[in-house]
Image (cartoon, rainbow over all chains, first blue to last red; front, side):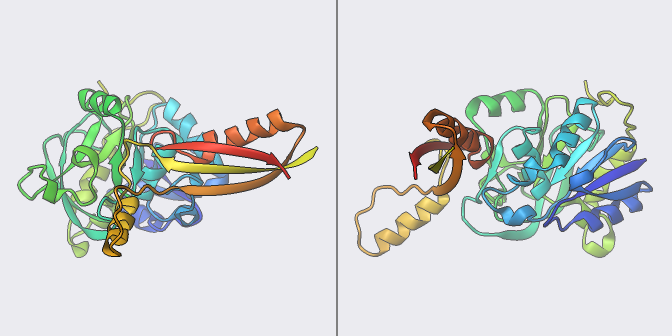
Length: 236
Length: 83
């Protein structure tokens, strides 16, 4: 499996993702955003960082990159696309994912470990993982996911809420919500399930040395699903 | 072509919480000021050329819709004037 990892000005997690991808036996190429060509790849990753200095809004300027059209084209073909942290913000700004990410409710930048429950297995990144409790690191100041009530109700009903912040026993309490996100939402998918975004960093918890391996489970779920130019088989 | 200046004011929608505004409100209260509510936003000034007023207005609206505001969380208002 070949996975494209996009690099924008200010991306900082592309090498970590490429390394984590190599740990699950897949090939990763880091592609510069301005001339990224996703044809021939099985999946794409939009990593974390602070693209364009988070100017205007986090992800807003990256969303006008040529890579945005390339991601739209790949999405239309059903390619699995994962955005983490700033990559999640970018995918929301492009309009490939519902909602938006705003300043953490307490105004603090949070660099910590969080627990999450995987709420949906309708995505190539969580196939077979529904109900699992995972632990991953976060590092963000603008990770509070918001949407209007209709959007929230729709994505809850459609199984598009993929990751929810919980305590270490799986309860979605206010105390376990690190940024004030609506309904403790840490990650969402598009309607088809092929595009997923989450604020935590799977690439930073893919080997024991880094204090956790739950991120690797997300990448392992992906490598079990082959992109065949249409909606992934795991999407119901 | 005429030179125009557009002022685009972007604000969080009424139903979106504005933690920055809340923090500023708390700071103003600490000064002993009786403050009910504070909302923040940003103001962006753009100079550009357009054929006439309606064209300038349309260009400024496009700036707001396609980049300067995110319709999921923000509203914007524009003022356009010939320089």
